[in-house]
Image (cartoon, rainbow, N blue to C red; front, side, top):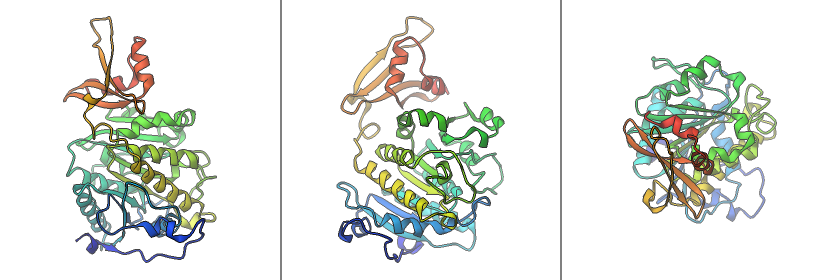
Length: 370
């Protein structure tokens, strides 16, 4: 049934081969019993980056040349979503296809196209989850919020932020000079957590708990500095490096919670020697490698399976804080009282250390009784 929505990717000669073609990603794709499905969507609705709709096949050409044959993960390429008579038709089709894949336990990887395609992915997820954690990796905040149905690649995030099923919205890698201070002040604390690029530069691993607590990850290639990713209509001088974005994609793939992924805004019209689409292909590859090496951690496993550690606060005004530690991989979680009851969130080892020293960790402040 899903095949009716797609035009199959016919393939193109690979630009290069590092090894015999039988080892390549393209030769290892399957058509049934798959856990991951690649979807191309050529829709373009970002007035600041015209031409990004040509990216899906350009990225595929690079992706198919990489090594395939993951040990645990079977991957299908469903092709490019057929264009509707209007953008609304395309969004509706993407939502329908994504909802069907999620219902089957298949992780969709959506190659855009414009960044607003994140919105129908979010709408599809609403059909299977009551509360959703969405993470965007972007140099800017695609805001302000509009109550109308008109949105594009620069404004769509407001609809996700203000949706009643959003549990938390995270923006990683933003650059302060691209985000009005009024937006940041308005959104911080409103189910939002914004992390500047500088924090990631200092410690890229600090983002791992954010990605572990994510249902939907959407990457805008403008988050990557121009030297590593020139395929964008406007040069972004600073930003994440190619190595850093691949590291973040790997952390996301390792998350046992994350169930949908999209990569957007690569623009072959401005690409230099296919550098951007090649990097996008490597980002996808690292994401899949993460999936292939998942630990089966919480929420796939009951939190009671881990070692419980308690930070005791002597003041009666503060409650003791319960942490859970998987000693096999040094992953930590924290239990926080919220308005809807106790919830478990991914955290850093340093959060436990902070609590043991008598201070409340930042993650507690973000979620306590919210």
